[in-house]
Image (cartoon, rainbow, N blue to C red; front, side, top):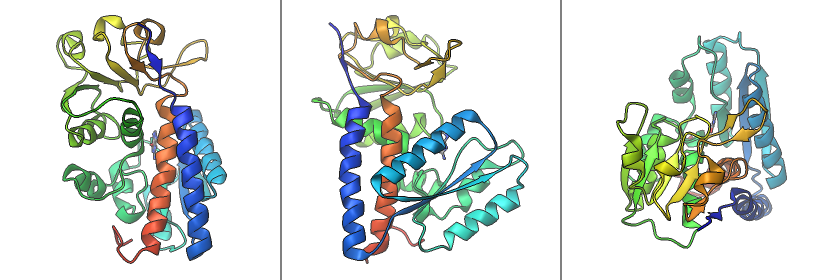
Length: 291
Ligand code: GUN
């Protein structure tokens, strides 16, 4: 069997067209233009490229984006001051500080400084906490995008065994939580897990978010499993590849996401979705958050 290749690119295109329509409606009906402030610190090439992609996606959707770039010598207080500024600017609906930050800056302090009502990354402890207890919140974009991709397939999540490899705060932990909410049975694996393959082979849905090129070969995968690859690794050749050995695993899985063109485009799409949601919250009396 050769797996169906799940194009995040196609699903993202469809969802972005819908978001663009809603952005336009909000502008016409309420005179509100969704606006996202992005702060980039330092010169990391991967971060620069992600931020460029976010800017371009905003522009295409009609969302205003404001980019502030700072050298890695910026102090934590200076960075917090910029966040304070955007927290208080009613025309800004979303604030995103691109991670990672330089070592001298406390990432959690920065995330906690963003008003939860503008935390369109869904990283603030208030949003993470609300997500855990099934309350309205901004959902972290990559996990949210993964759930949307799985829901777009002709399969039910309820009762399925999901195995997540990786326990990061921004992908592994929250994706398991979101799929638990969809009534999956969730197992987390990580670098200290013993006999990884014996667990991953039980997965109906296997999510690889470890950051190690081609770690997951066919010996880790059950016949007919859905395989979601969150890894973005650069090979020595310069080519991007995921955590999954795509060519070998696609012969065993029922569905598989490619890298690039899989989860990546969905992450940015859910960022647009959250920014629109934040602007809609402003327009609506029944605000999810006060910001
Ligand atoms: N760095 C890698 N992924 C992300 C993301 O989704 N949001 C932010 N802010 N930084 C990141």
